[in-house]
Amino acid sequence: MTRLKMGIIGVGGIAQGRHIPSFLELQDKVDLIAVQDVNEVRAEEVAEKYNIPHVFKDYQDMFEKVDAVTICTPNKFHAEISIAALEAGVHVLCEKPMAITVEECEAMIAAAEKNERLLSIAYHYRYTPEAKLAKKAIVHNEIGDPLVTRVQAMRRRKVPGWGVFTNKDLQGGGSLIDFGCHLLDLALWLLDDPEPVEVMGRTYDRLSKTPGLVNDWGVFDHETFNVDDHVTSYITFKNGESMQFECSWAANIKEDSTTLTISGADGGISVYPFELYQAKYGALLDSTAKIRDGEPTPGLSQATNFVDSCLGEDELIVKPEQALKVTKLIEAIYQSSEKGTSIKL
Ligand SMILES: NC(=O)c1ccc[n+]([C@@H]2O[C@H](COP(=O)([O-])OP(=O)(O)OC[C@H]3O[C@@H](n4cnc5c(N)ncnc54)[C@H](O)[C@@H]3O)[C@@H](O)[C@H]2O)c1
Image (cartoon, rainbow, N blue to C red; front, top):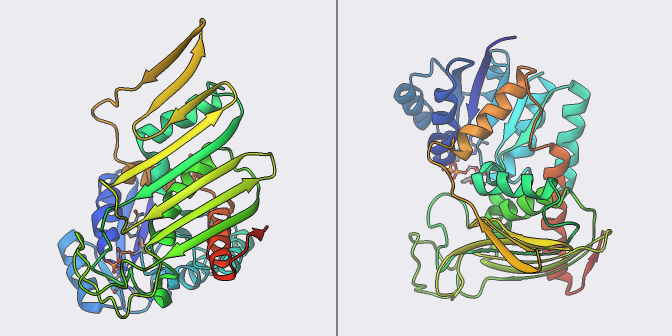
């Protein structure tokens, strides 16, 4: 196979904002031929706008026509649709999080293995220039063994006021499963997938449950809001490493920040912005990076890796077993908060 026939399921914000433009940039190897959405009017409009020839009412009918699908529905449907596609012999790129529960993720992996199809998850932070550089620096042993990781994925009063982000049934949670998941994935990838052994977590929703919250990202109903807007966690790993994690959609802080730092035995690294901290020649040395113009967007790099992997020309960067580990941590953080105790994995 030299060209890939691609379909998109769920054509809302992320499909139109990231995946469709990326696949259209890869026209030398991808034919974007089909869309499906429960909102049939939206599916027709998107097909017309982007010149996509086929619109299906039922995604099962799409599977006969395509080699791969990109799934961009609310989280509740990720597992069900991925498994249906894999069973039909179709490769899957599924939006993050992989699914709401570990059980669902395991069923997705089993379906991929049984049908010998590829399954990847859209953890696109890995393709940011800073993250790629951090990965290279760590692989080249610039910081030695990682010891302590600090993650903060923080927004000041920005609860998404659109879509279904504040609906627990459809999304499985709030700031953690939606935003924190990206940074958990990135941290685990940079650390080379250490095995988590114990997780302590706390979730909060008090700001978003308050009537009349001053919110910068639109309006939502504080009465039906039933997910977390701020989460803290402490995670320990089998190899002795530990991670301090915090994420929020609605913190009372000075400004938004996305921070991931790793302090290692020989040096340290900060991903955003990229900085390397070392001790050499009897001095403390700091290195920064100039991110060069013309770097492909993370969305394009993600699409390229998935398409090339389906065509047998590359290997998936985001492997389903890695995305499962992220969901394991998310599930454990939620359980820990609910039970008021740490969770042993
Ligand atoms: N990678 C990222 O940074 C990022 C950013 C935003 C959203 N997302 C993820 O993408 C997914 C979609 O988010 P969005 O912001 O595009 O939401 P959205 O509400 O804008 O779009 C979702 C679309 O899915 C359709 N849909 C709902 N149920 C469906 C079903 N059963 N079958 C087919 N279509 C269905 C809806 O009609 C809608 O058009 C979520 O899983 C979200 O976590 C990822």
